[in-house]
Structure formats: C-alpha cells, structure tokens
Amino acid sequence: MSGKASYSLLKCNLAGKMSKIFIGLNHFLYKQIFKRILFLTNSEFIHEGLTAFGELLGTVYFFNFLISKLIKIEDKSLEQNVIGIEFKNPVGLAAGFDYNGKLTKVTSSLGFGFETIGTITNKPYEGNPGPRLGRLVKSRALMVNKGFKNPGIEKILKKLKKSKFSIPVGISIGKTNTTKHMTQNEAVKDITDTFIKAEKSRIKFSYYELNISCPNLYGDISFYPPENLENLLKALANLKLKRPVFIKMPIEKTDKEIIQMLDVITKFQVVGVIFGNLQKDRKDPSLDREELNKYKIGFFSGKPTEKRSNELIKLAYKKYGKKLIIIGCGGIFNGKDAYKKIRLGATLVQFITGMIFEGPQLAAQINLELIGLLKNDGYKNIAEAIGIDNR
Ligand SMILES: Cc1cc2nc3c(=O)[nH]c(=O)nc-3n(C[C@H](O)[C@H](O)[C@H](O)COP(=O)(O)O)c2cc1C
Image 1 (cartoon, rainbow, N blue to C red):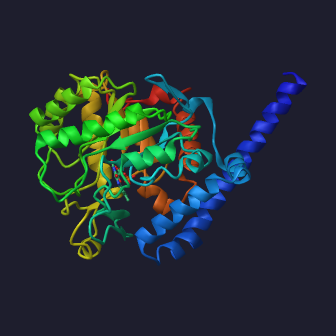
Image 2 (image 1 turned 90 degrees about the vertical axis):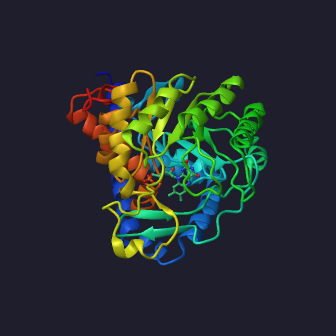
C-alpha cells in the first residue's frame, strides 16, 4: 500500500472511531438527560419547538458541517440505487415528523439517507381537536391524532422553492381533511389537484408518497375497497407523473385485503409500498392497558406497529417482491429492528418514534449497526440481504 493510501485509510479509521464515540455519547446523554427533561412537557409543544430549532440549525453552515463530520456514517455497503435514485444509506425519516418541510438540511447532517415531508394536502388543515400527540412510555409508542395538520400544498411549495436537497426528499400527499362532506370522486380530484400542483413546481424532490392510510380523518372516504383504489390510481396514471410513487399502506387490514389492494396497485405505475401506518387496534397486546386508558382518541406508532408491519413486509415481498419496492416502517428503534425488516424484504426503512425514544443520532446509529450486521453475515452490500429470510 502506498503512503498516501495508508494515510487516507488511517484518516478513515480515525473518523469512524470518532463517529462511534460521538454517536454513543449522544445516545447516552439523550436517554439519561435530554429525554427525561423533554418528556416532562407536552409532546406537541416539544415537537413544534424541536422542528423550529432544527430549521434554525439548518441555516447555520458550521453546525451542519460539524454535526455531519461527527455523526454521519458513510459506507459503500449501505449505498443503493433504487429506481434511479441514489440512496447513500437505507435509513429514512418517515412522513409526519417534518410535516412542514423544515428539516431537510438537518436530517442529512444527522445521517438520514432520505426523508419524506408531509403529509401535505390540497387545502390547509389546523389539526384535529387535541390532544393531538401523546407518549406511551411503557408501550414505547406515541398516540397520534393530528389528522394531517398542515399549511396546504401551495404554502409548502412556496417555502421549498429555493431548497437544494443533499438527500432524496419525497412529498407525502393525502386527501384534504375537512368536516365538509366529500364524495369519493371529489376526494380523488382533491388528491390529483395536489399532485398537479406539486408536479408543476420546480422543486427537486425525488419521489411521492400517496397516503391512503391515515386513520385520523373526517368522513367516510376510503381507498381500501379495490374499486375505489383503482379509480384513484387511474386518475393518477392520467397525470403521467415524472417522479415515482410509493403508497403508504394500512396495517390493520387482513392479509387477504392487503393482497387485493396489492393486486390493484401492481396494475399501475406504482413503484412501491410502505408498510405501514399507525396501529388502530387498541387491543394490540404491546399496548400497556393503563397508558392506553389515558387516551380515548388517536392511534399508535412505535412498537405496537412493529409486528404487523413485519408480517406485511413478508407477505408483500413473497407475493410481489419482484414488482414492488418495499419500504419498512413501524417500530424501528435500533439497527437490529431495521435489519429484520430488510431481511424480510424491505429495500429501505423509515422511522419516527424510535428517534423520539432513542435520540437524534438514531439514523447514524442504525447505519453503524447495519454495517456491522452486514459484515457479520458476509454481505458486501445491503441489497444482498433484502428478503433473505423470506425466500
Ligand atoms: C407524530 C406522528 C405523525 C404522523 N403523521 C403521519 C403523516 O402525516 N403521514 C403519514 O403517512 N404517516 C404519519 N405518521 C405515521 C408514521 O409515518 C409511521 O408510519 C408510523 O409512526 C410507524 O413508524 P414509527 O413506529 O417509526 O413511528 C405519523 C406518525 C407520528 C408518530
């Protein structure tokens, strides 16, 4: 090895060790100090405060440079080109955390490989009557009752107009939440109008998520019956969208119902599905009864979603693994949780709740753990592990 090559290897190893220490320290400090303080205060207030703070930090070049040098994990084994999009790593921020598109600079510095903004709707919505967010510490879950709180697509597009993204950023689009009655056809038009507005913008986002599975909306609109889903996807197909579409799937449906939905989805130019959204089943055994009784409304993220998310990744990969890219989402709190989803068939993974419980270093931490797990199993690249437990 030449002197130059061994020097750069040494530099790489040193940087790797520094990142490991910094990630470990962050995790420790977050769990022992910051989380204890943050968890004393109203969760929605903390969420809003942290995203505003994150947006501010995103404007400070030095902070982003430093954090990304200290925390970001890069390794060839994590890189993938998925439907023409370069992902530096498979770990993403799921829809619902950065619903206003404030964090795209910071998420990249924190080591996320991609992020989804939204869910955004055609018309703004101030959010469901509270409580909109709560913590279930024993269940390692959050209660969510936001109902697509967002400022509407036009405002978001205006805000993102000059943004340059250093990771793939997607926009999650759903039906406007309103107490006014809407027919299925009106709902389809509402959604397609939002896509048209996003498509016309010059913002360089990489993909769409079509969110058909939010459990906190008014009215009886549903895209679960195959004929309703087909109508929506036909209308979207007519738009000839330039970016790929993933569909955010429910987890409360039976295997048979999910297969029926996938049968429809695979007839269209949908590149993939995300399993999945919140847990609606209040009887789920992973929910602590005492904590659950504090919340009469809302649905649940985190650990109560994990089992069903994994079952559905397995199901979808078995039946449609060659046709659809699967994004695994639900209850990821560490590298092993993420790796399990990948081995069941997920190409990429996303999370929110894990970060609230484990700290902002979680994306980098998961990437670090994934590198070790892949190496242990003798894989050179993450793509080799996809679906390996499900063939
Ligand atoms: C506070 C919060 C808000 C959410 N809002 C959305 C949303 O707007 N759109 C969406 O597709 N999913 C939303 N979700 C669901 C998450 O994207 C994810 O599917 C679910 O929480 C499971 O992942 P997790 O266990 O890693 O949180 C939200 C979840 C949380 C916790």
